[in-house]
Amino acid sequence: MYIGKAAQLSGTTIKAIRHYEAIGLLPTPQRQGQYRVYSEQSVELLMFIKCAQQLGFKLKELQEILHGHQGNALPWERADQAIASKKRELAAQIAELQRVQAGLLEFESQLKEVHGHCSSMSSIAI
Image (cartoon, rainbow, N blue to C red):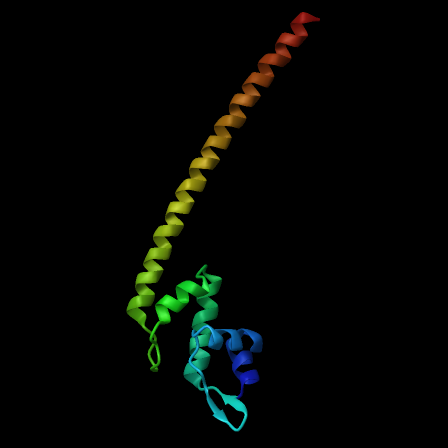
């Protein structure tokens, strides 16, 4: 299939496909004359890349996962390791955000307490 069909089936763009080829994420396809010809495996790889990006993987991370990938099967073991690492990273970010949220709630509570104290003091002074 040609690049337009591969883009349509994978949900990517022609520009993205050319970029992935340029940075080595997608193997250079065979050519039929001057046209690039993509296989079903290329479309599956494009779908993998798109899904991984939507889940927070950067292209650099995907390059590390797919480094040396040329065959039909994706390097699942490296992908599993990268997913586990991404999950740990995300859990740490969630914990940090929860800590910040708790701090904000405490700070808000303290401000309300001080504001309430100041309001009662100003009504006494009048």
